[in-house]
Length: 416
Image (cartoon, rainbow, N blue to C red; front, side, top):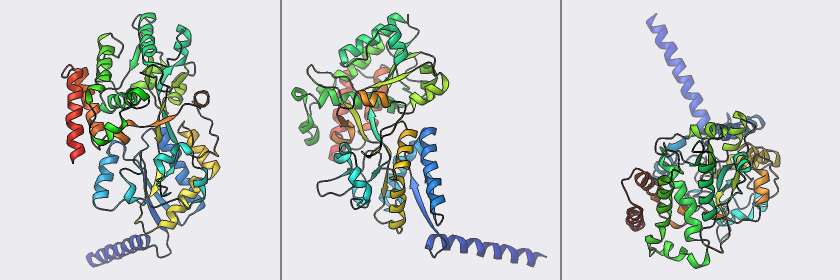
């Protein structure tokens, strides 16, 4: 009896090993591609997973193993880059050229490239014409707001930082403190990092008289020019314009509180509007470009690539990987993904209708500026922006100390 059991175990083991070997070798039994995405919201993951399933149905000989590591994505990809063993397909999440450029295949010969939105050219193409990734959608980040509340209070969406501060104070006064003027899920330092990153562009880049691009890039930037941002954030806290639980609030609370009419403004999130609509259709969420800081400047969106699909240049399945991207670029699929993620499509031939369409249409002439840290800061500074924001609001740092810390880390990371 024992001999029979052992024989059965050996047969099963050999069979399983053979299946695994056939799948990996691509000997006719099918090809499996690994795909890693930075999508975190349930809405975003759902629409991408549905696209994967539709592809697999059309091409039954190709399987896509889609993965959504969440907060662990960047660390995981860094390890894989160090080992030169990346997924067959992966999301470049804003770093198509700077971080992942040497690891991705050139997609410039693909049919969809002729329809690439020109706004994404500086982010996804280089001077030689190499195309680094396919954009599932594109980010247009600004500030989300409770449009229902602002209409009720007679507050116009602000276009300048001065009018933004005034709007926050009006919300506090009109609601008698029942509504948080500017809400952050500050338990996650990235939320505070987002504040600094988005406002740094109108402070230090877009205004001609206050443009420090050259200094930021060559390492000579005087970080005292940055102090305005921590000063204003601290002023908001001291005036009661931020949520009292700013350092412990969780991102899951955002949609619930907005749906309850308890938030005036918060940093933009593409999934916020649809989530609020599901909870309370009576509340309309709007979005505006970033207000100007310097007189005479123009508002701007902050963004570029949001979710993308790049191909690892050393994949053994380059043709199958391209076939997947070709499928994603089909108009009906591209439209569905853009609408499902509530963001504009990355292709100019796609008219995507989503929750924020009226706002994107209203501000269609507003330029999109790239994320500040992706262009002007060395890798690692995002963490510094977020952590100094937490220390500022906890009383452990002054605005001047925040700028000093930024200068120190900027120099240290730049020299690495």
